[in-house]
Amino acid sequence: MLCRSKPNLHVQRWTLPLPMLELPSELVRRILDLLDQSSLKQTSLVCSALCGPCQELIFATLTLEHKAGCADPPAHGQALITRYRQNPAIAGYVKHLVICETKWLRRPSHDSWLARDDKFPEAVDLLSLDKLQSFYLDLGRTDLNQLPEGVKSAVRKICCSPSLTKLELLGAPLSLIDGCSAYLQTLCLRNVHICPTAGSWRKAAPVHLHYLDIATSNPQGVITHIVDRLLDPDNNINTTRLVFLHANLDIRHSLHYNTLNRLIATCAETLRTLSLHLEHNMERCDIDHDANIDIGSCRFLTEISISFTMIYSVHGLKRVLSEVLRIFETLSLGNQIETIRLDAHFLGVMGAEFNEESLGYKQWGLLDTLLSNRERFGRLRKIELDVSDNSRINPLDEPVAKRFENCMKALISAGTLEVKYSQGPQLLG
Image (cartoon, rainbow, N blue to C red):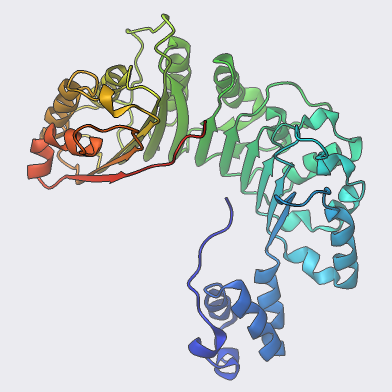
């Protein structure tokens, strides 16, 4: 999300308004940026000269959502129109816009607030979109094409903000990226739809992405379509400058491997951080054992994060660990890897299933041998193994992470491995 935590500083404790006025304006803004919302409001009341800079920070993020517990859909549009007409200046302070559709649409008496807010398009017109830096859109289960034409047009207009540097789309049409700004650097696509959106626009100038996040629980062809769209030269989206890439990989399908390999190949000379979430379904029989993610060409890669989740059973854990091994084996001698993060989540797994075979002791041992090889991983300084385990029955009363530690003694003795383990969330039902 766009919000960030700040130290709980109070205006009375850090300075008096008068000395603040003698500082350079840029330094004043940096100091004010350290304050929380309450202190910013107090400061704006204490010193009229700081009212403007404080308001810029107070109104920098605009969040429009249907909060839980509110039976009636909110009328954000009319509220914003009233506010901005009373004080037009604050409409120009909005730099980060968050729009979240009603998340429980299938419940009785709950409707899409975007569909019912007929003032929303008018409110968007009052914003200074040429100053907007980031846009987070979560449509949930709402189909954008089923919303009123004015709402669709307003959403497209926001996505085409000329100053936009970050765009996050959840459950929205992929075609919304067609009109994005040439300044766009961060693009997050989660469960986007590949259906066309009427009236999409073509980019006039190329977009040079630095951060790309692709995650989808939709059928396997979706991620391939997304990557094809991004790599299509007609779309003017350049991935050759990517420094961060996250994607979820379905290890059942060679199509996913080929797709991600094509994407990785475009940014091999610039990529610094690679994050993968491995998905699997061992009930399927179409696993391609010859498919492989190849990151050997990423010469400047310094950080790798790999996560996976085992739900109700550890059946398939060895397959996932074998995949992790194959990914690291593609790295050449003298690679630049400094940090590796492995996140393993065990949800609702019966502890009685835990044994040497099911937990993949052999694979953990092979991983220990590979990563402790200083000729290949000479720059490796830290490995974080974060294990979240909420097993219902654990006959040995020993965290599963502790068992993994026993298989990775070389990394532990070298002081490279740091193991974290927690109870983890409980599954309902």
